[in-house]
Amino acid sequence: MNRSDFLALGSSVFLTALTGMNTSEPEAILFQDDGSIPNSRYPLLLYRNAFSETGPAGAAWLEKLFSSNNWTNSWRNGVFPYHHYHSITHEVLGVYSGSALLHLGGEKGRKIRVQTGDVIVIPAGVGHKRLEASPDFGVVGAYPDGRDYDVLRGEPGDRPQADQNIAAVPLPKTDPLHGAKTGLIRIWH
Image (cartoon, rainbow, N blue to C red; front, side, top):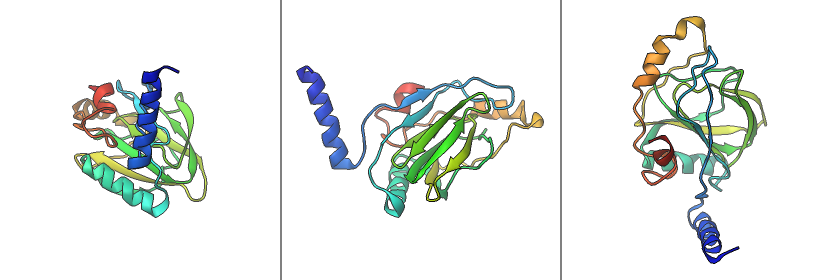
């Protein structure tokens, strides 16, 4: 390992210990329109082990962090057990407790296991569904600029209005974890 790699690794470990946040780049996952679920031209972002606080304290920590980055209108709960998407906003989900197997991107998408500490940024139009979950599975959800949300299930009558709605959703000014510095700001813009 060369010196710059070592220093970068050391800086990341130090920042994680100092802030409770992992500064790693997210996995970017792009889903194609499957006919029912429109998905998005922007990739879903999956931050693994993004934070260390858990349980109710972790939920409160996420709400505060998301709010500080202007992702508000937050709630605590789980993920619906059916395919759905939002046509009027993007969404962030921070897993503060337990684990779940999610089906992302609709029937032709991917099944991905998430666990405590993971954060998912879901672009408007991207399908998501809970397939299974531990009894203690809990997430904090929030929306850029505190936007309202709708719940569409890929029904035949949803489109073309849903496509028009998705096209009109503005890009967030901040990443829910990292503010205006990196993450979706670098990847989506």
